[in-house]
Amino acid sequence: MPVTPTSAAEQVLREFEGAWRDDTPIFGCCRRSVETALEHADLLEIATLDVTARVQALRAAVERDLPGHLQAHRCCAGHLADVAFDLPTMIAPPADAEVEVERAEV
Image (cartoon, rainbow, N blue to C red; front, side, top):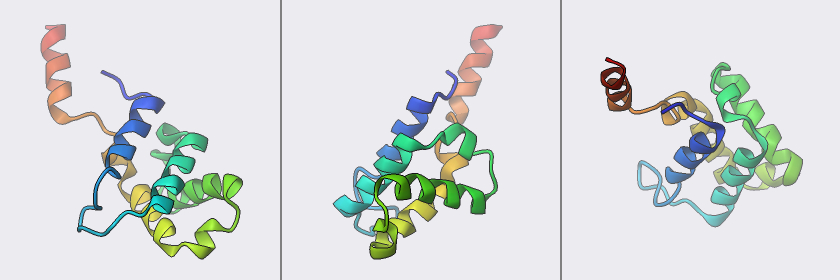
């Protein structure tokens, strides 16, 4: 199954359902910032950029809706940087999905 903008956004949001990977709490403002970035950014396009450009693109998407928010909420800025760094692997289809597609084509 190909990755779509919607499935990519859903995959990223799933990462923010509980505590972050190192048990760092995810506050409501952090979830809102990530949701805002996902609503206003093309994740598939952003995933092809270098990590610095990914951070800037996600931050710009949040700044459009929540001006100044990232300056006041360093926690949100940190989570956006985490998303930017991990985005290509976060939205990649699972390795076993590719195997199933190959088997179906045979």
